[in-house]
Image (cartoon, rainbow, N blue to C red; front, side, top):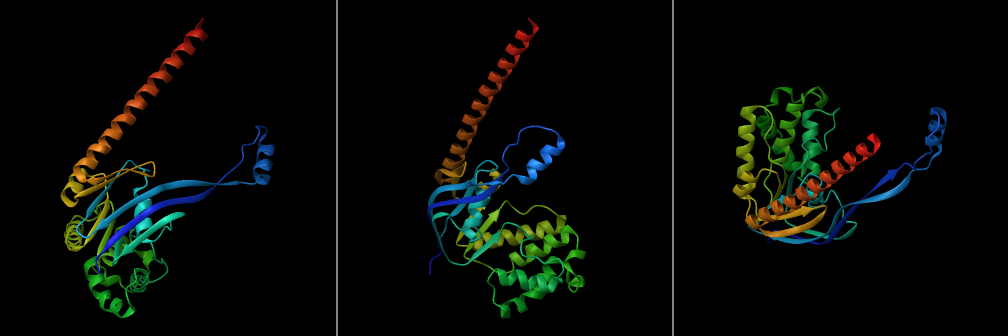
Length: 273
């Protein structure tokens, strides 16, 4: 069956709670009011009315400022976030490299954590048994396989997470930024594996601010702005659209800054007179 992604009118909202504003008073009154106040539940819209399709051969760069919704969209594609409205339909196996530490149990051994993570990825237990040794070898952690995870350094945990996440090939790869931290030798080895997996995948979706990387990997671009799609199409056109949005936003910020300075200066002059 051909791999594909179809997102139709997807909106993702998450709840958050806001503490009601209190009248200023003494510290005791403030403390009592804060304890007695009932937080109000509100909703933040992270993605709004997202619609696009991806088919075999598509290499899509998610482009946008921090907070535009790139990681949220990736999580929706993995199934970690369910749309509040609309639908996300994915055909084919998925491999997500979003957070290397998700699914780990610090009290469990390395081998136990391999089973936990691999099972969460949907890998059958029989296959996981065959993957344990290759994962430990790639992560260079065979000597500490029986130790609890909490005894490892952050770099060792990262290596283990990467080795597990890339232990099998999938039809669709979902990447949040490109792997590039840690020991130089391991980074080189990890990048080689990641490049091989990307080239062997049918569909790739990657969120990155590195335009050199996206131009090398991708043929399409999806520009997100404040949780909405601003553009979806050829990569070069997507980059131009993103730069245009940034230029408009910077001009607006400059105008607002000048207005603020002028208002501040006028207030100072009035105060002086």
